[in-house]
Image (tube, rainbow, N blue to C red):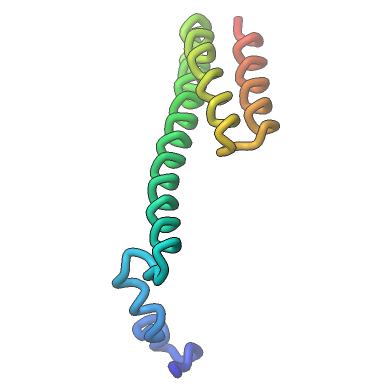
Length: 113
């Protein structure tokens, strides 16, 4: 076993970590585990895309607010609301987080003159 308290610990790694680094994912042995690994990869990509769309929608509203354009902010907010709701309904964010985002954005837009 490698002593990790030595000053060269960052250079050498234990064998189990080095083997995992060269693999895409831990190898599944059963057909059920292989299928679950495939599904997890597909779901991960789909969820990442939905989260990205969620963040982008919020950023568009924030940028419109920072620019001081109330009509553009309202338009962006109306476009962002269904995206936030769909992200929430898919279980990617909590209901309260979705409500918090919508509430804060709406209050900020309403406070604009």
